[in-house]
Amino acid sequence: MTSISHHFASLRASNQCALIPFVVAGDPNLEITAEALRVLDSNGADLIELGVPYSDPLADGPVIQAGATRALKRGTRLDNVLQMAQIVTPKLRSPIILFTYYNPILNLGTVSFLEKAAASGIKGLVVPDLPLDEASNLLEVADTVGIEVILLVTPTSSKERIEAIARQSRGFIYLVSVTGVTGVRSYLQTRVKDVLQDIRSVTSKPIGVGFGISKPEQARQVRDWGADAVIVGSAFVERLAASTPYQGLEAIKDFCRDLHTSIEGRKQEAESKR
Image 1 (tube, rainbow, N blue to C red):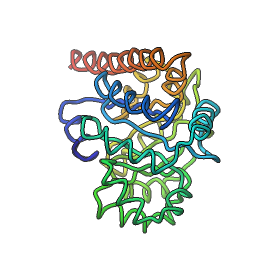
Image 2 (cartoon, rainbow, N blue to C red):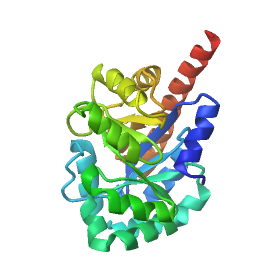
Image 3 (tube, rainbow, N blue to C red):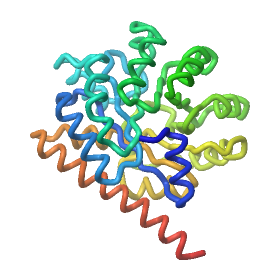
């Protein structure tokens, strides 16, 4: 796998918008998670976000919270997740972005955590409860081991805050499309389009939009607004939690293909109008 930055450079060179699915590690178990990563990688994903289950997930809505609870009840822990990643990442084309809260990092120790994550093939890191003003140490150590820390912008972020986040974020900038937690939404706030343009005015770094995207038409809309990546979480977690693991894997395969086709179709339409 290449770095996230290089991966986005390749996608931009071919005018492609990235698809980034999210799954909860250990839901329903780590063996199925490993297979889910392989399924997504071969059915349209460009990068994959892997969530570490956590007991107090402040940014997660009910679907992802339920997935994390199921994973924790089955004994899934950070070390288990990294061990699984170390086995599966060499077989993937898509860079893996680890999504975790800061307490597990502190518990393991920043240096130890980042070294273990890098050795496991992790290429990116999202820590939603880490404020920008306290992120310098994590960013510095992550740079030395080749992990890109992706920072979040929200619809309520000021222009000054956006500029500061854009300077520090590695890989790409994660634009949260809602002012609440993750979860399926029936529509996207048009404010997202404006924030995309605000970010674009201060940086050339790629921008990914996540939280609330659950349908192919929403993915197309985000693409049309100018995003470099579409991030879809709860809709994948919900499908993977189908009645049997086989049905869940089939469901995320089909959904990933649908999203990829939708985004690619819009790209081809735009090119044909030039």
